[in-house]
Length: 359
Ligand SMILES: NC(=O)c1ccc[n+]([C@@H]2O[C@H](COP(=O)([O-])OP(=O)(O)OC[C@H]3O[C@@H](n4cnc5c(N)ncnc54)[C@H](OP(=O)(O)O)[C@@H]3O)[C@@H](O)[C@H]2O)c1
Image 1 (tube, helix red, strand yellow):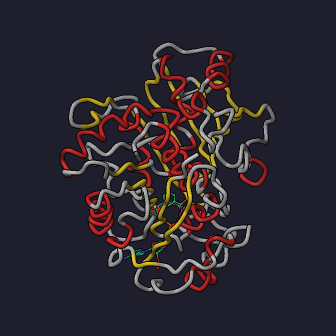
Image 2 (cartoon, protein in one colour; image 1 turned 45 degrees about the vertical axis):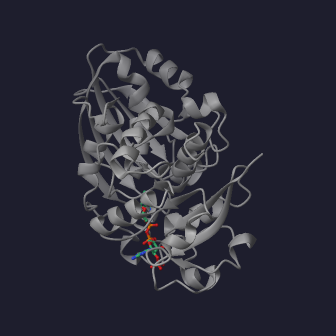
């Protein structure tokens, strides 16, 4: 089978390292270029990433001899060498937007983890199990950019992946409103316990910009693809509080939800158990077999025990019960750098490849 050649922009970062690891031996994708800032350019990957390597497995063999390129200055060198790029960079919003558009206009599709283009109307923001149909707006984006194959597709913020996939199968009961409190891991800030010692024995009740993203982004995910872009949904109303907690990987969400037509507990459990999206139907290589895993035990899901459920790509739930203010409450959980970042982006790229967007 043909393999698509891939570049990773931001390869030395926390999410970039996940890409480098996940792409090792990937059945469809062959990583051939690694890119970062001018600080890393010209160095072999192990030297460029240095002490920042935070994965539990060593740097893959294929990456050891790759010389890191400058994502801004060397963009043209990728033309003809790669079929698409992943992008996860720590740059200002306008710089990130410009960088991603530069690659798209070079006819190199961009699968992005960055937030810069999430609100752009004709850029699809995809959770592959939920809104694969939004890929249709790529045609309008290509028209705007004046490209034949170049485009940008993004994934949503990592916090959402712990509750939106659990609310989605319940939309048929008329989800009216949801209150969410997230307990987010430090890898979500690109940190480890060594680089974020202030989090040990502590909780930090503020993550810049996160609550707004957690409330607004679901409405684009649940929006409608029409004409020149996505028309955002206007309901359900979501209110969120986001806290940073001393956990290495895995975001937990405490969720409260009210419905137009209150379902029984059994109906909710059945909706979760039976939910499957395009990745499951297409049998994409990174897709979890079972998207939602419900734990009956009162003390699950836990980051330490459950973050690697289905290679970190499943969404976990537990403690579903009736509430005094809302109809129900439950706990959601997902791995923030796998399902919530690099793994979700690899799954999105597999969906794009399967649907012919890289041809
Ligand atoms: N961590 C998560 O769980 C998570 C989840 C979802 C989304 N995201 C998003 O993913 C992106 C990356 O996050 P991260 O946690 O991986 O950040 P990070 O660990 O700080 O890594 C940032 C990367 O960006 C590169 N970079 C910085 N300035 C650059 C420039 N001018 N040109 C090219 N590359 C540049 C860095 O290269 P150097 O090493 O050369 O400086 C590094 O590779 C962010 O937009 C973040 O919001 C992160």
